[in-house]
Length: 235
Image 1 (cartoon, rainbow, N blue to C red):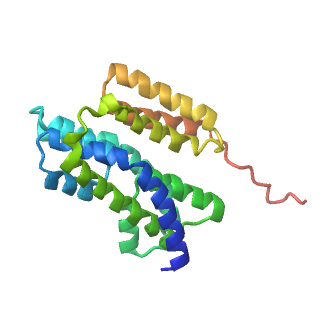
Image 2 (image 1 turned 90 degrees about the horizontal axis):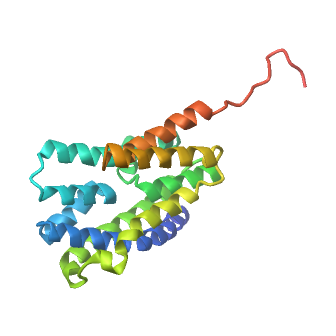
Image 3 (image 1 turned 45 degrees about the vertical axis):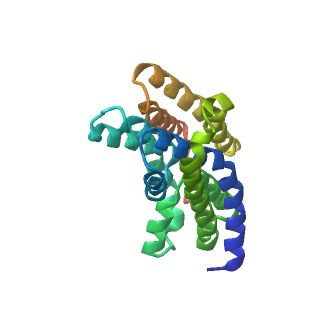
């Protein structure tokens, strides 16, 4: 691993990791409030490593919902990661099989956003940079979940402190990072509209996947492949 690229990735991970600390604290507090022990909440963050889906899971655990429905709901929330992996996998072909598997485990929303920027700038994602960022974000997420689980009850009602708006603001920042991409001004409103309609008709958490699918379909329909010169054409 190149130490220079690793440090660059770690610095990017520090920015992302510290910005998600309140969200990790919130998850830990909600998990314990829902009946999990601090150890169980911490292990859930370490094994699943998916903030939004973890919150969906812990909120359903205490409602006597069948286990299969919890699994299906978590899958619905995490469906976007299938799209992330499909988009990023071509740039991970040079990785070893173990490194590629590990990279996909760490493929969270900010990891995908920052890796996509690396592709735009350099045409590739250096493994050292990728894992430098991933290790820092992962470590801070698990640590913040543990702290929230241990001391979250001292905070009281997270919504009263405005913590409930952190996740929407965080995702809005990620989306705006792609504002210079082609079709951004068309695909994003279509995806958002579909998600809002699904929220009021189908319900949560399915609106997440439906909004994502609507955006993908819109991008596929509106995408215009680059024209290539005819074989017999001369410049």
